[in-house]
Amino acid sequence: MGLMLSSLAASDESTLTTPQVHALAHEVGVSVRLELPTILEQLERQRLISLSPNGLAVLGVTSAMVLSHTAAAFDQTDPQPHEHAVLDIAEKVSQSPLESELAAQYLGDTFKLTKDDTTDLLEHCVAMDFLDGEDLGGGKQLLFNGHIFRRESAMKIQAVLQSLTNDESRKLVEIEQLLRSRGCLPLDEVKRILGEPLFEKLHAIGMLDVSEVANEHETQLYVTRPGAFTKFSNAFIDDAMDLAKAFVACLTYGIMRSSPDRGRITMLTALMRKMLTGAWTGNATAIGEDYRVLERRRVVAIRPKPGGYYEMRLLKRDIGELALQVLTAGDASEHSLPNFPGAAVTRYTKPEERRTLTRRTQAQPSKRATRNVLTALRTGRL
Image 1: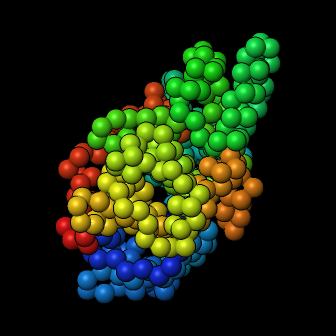
Image 2: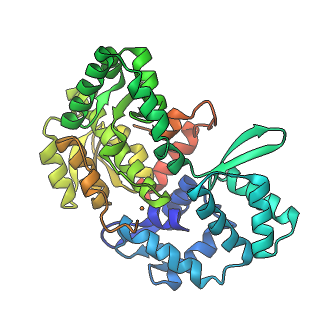
C-alpha cells in the first residue's frame, strides 16, 4: 500500500483517471484486479484520496508523509499474527544476520505458527525482497537486511582502503572531489581517472553508485556518491532516494548527451527553479523521451504539444529539491527528507541493482508495455 500511495502522491492535490491509476499500479507491481481495490478503499478510509466512477482525487501528500500513513493503515487493518511476524523478523535480521532455521523456530514460538507456515512466510519474504537471503549450502540460508549489511561492512571497506597504494588513494580523492563539486559523473570519465581495477574494487564495497538510464537510442551509466543522497536507509527513504537519483541521472543525460535540436539543458538552475514552482516548463522533443521513468513514477507529468514537442511539470517537489541540491552542491545528505522518521529515459536501473546483477536477473519491461503506461499517464486513456 505504501508504494502505491507513494506513486499516487504529489505535493499538491491532483486528479487521476482510472487508466492512469491502473498504469501506476502496474508500475509498482500491484495487481489491478486483486490488490488495487482494497488498497484504494483503505486510502479513501484514511481520507487520502477521494474515489469517483472515473478515477480519483489525491490530496496533497509528500513523500515524507507516506510512511506515517502506511503505518496507520497497517494498524487499522487488524493485522494477523503472520503479519506481525513479518515485521518482527525484519527487525531481528536488521540487528544481526540470522539463519533461516533459527528464524523459523523463533517465529513459531513467538507467534504460534506451524513449521510449514513459518517456512512459507520466510520464503515469501525473500522472494519479495522484504528480506535478503544468501544460500549457505546444505539447505541453509542466511537472512539479513541488505541495507544494514552493506553499511555495516566497515571492516571490509577498511581493509580495501588500507590496501590502496598512494597513487590509488590520490585517484580516489580526485574522484570524490569531482563528485562533491559536480554531483554526477559519466562512468567512462570515472573509469578513465581511476582505472578499471580500482573502480571495480570501490564499486564492489559500495563507495561508488552506478545508475543506468536508457532511451530507444542508447544506454548511459552515471556515477554518484552513495552519501550524497542519504546517510541512513529504510524502504521508503530508499524509494524517494532512488527517484532523486533517477532525476539526477536523467538531467545529467540532458546536459551532456542531448543535442541542441532536441532540447539540451543549458540553464539547469533556472529550469529547476521554475519546475519547483509547479509550473509547466520546456518545449522540446527530449522531454517526451528522456524522462519517461520519472513520468511513470509520477515525479513529473508530461503532456504533448504541437509539432512533436513536450513540456513537463514537477509533481513531487521534495524529489526535485534533492536532485537540484546534488547537481548544484554535490551533496544532499544533510537535506535529505528531514521529516522522514528514522522514506526517453525509458529505463532507470538503480545503483543497488547495478551492483547485484550477478545475484538477481530482472526482466526489462517491453516497449509495448512501456508505451501503454505512458499513453495512459499522458492522456488519461488506455
